[in-house]
Image (cartoon, rainbow, N blue to C red; front, side, top):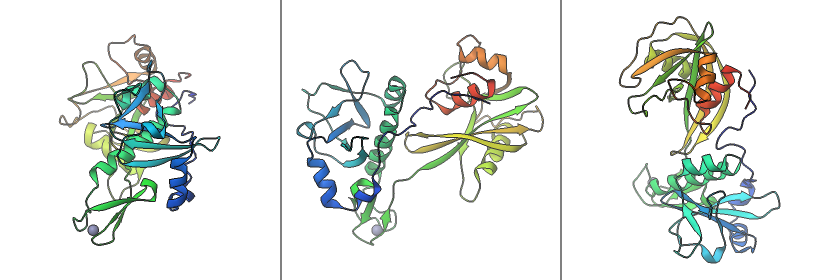
Length: 293
Ligand SMILES: [Zn+2]
């Protein structure tokens, strides 16, 4: 299987410089550096520059008050930060849905959006300690929160999700959830549960959602999906039969499709719609169908 296309939200171009995060003076110096730039997210929507083709990187004088996290250093060593706040009206940037931004950017710049959105969303939801209920404070340039009550340290979460194509005799299984747009089919997916491997999660989800027993799970690629903090693990699995028994609360319709049908759908020439290039489900289908990206 070959596919050379770009996986959405991947390719992070910044050095996250973890070694600097504990050094408050160093981080403060980077914030004051004339080359520092800030990605403002309004209600978790990143500001895009005029024309909507690139991120809007604000100067320090343009930055509103709000939770600020260190994103990292550019290849030239210039610091980049993300800020949760409302930009002044005279700033020539437009708050843009992160899915739209990821699609428009279409390259490694989208990885910055994923990092910023997941991190700032986590801070919004973790102002209080899950252990004792006391307020928590941001530390390590945004990469942890410390509880002032019990001293517990909390870290940004990543939620692993498996997303997979079951395949059998030249056909792959796609399905649609009850809330999907009309005609839209995708790979089956589900959250990994505590105490199971990725391979076991793939087999469990296929059986729970579609009644399909599978073996020979092969992990293919992974992708951050910052809504709010998923890590999508793309996999293929060999199905033991074509028989389906759907859990209709999760999957309202499923079908086995051939490689020709997948290629047609990816080209917009089928009676069903495939996922857009931003999503790893697109990568799974294109890779399985042998489409060069
Ligand atoms: Zn606590």
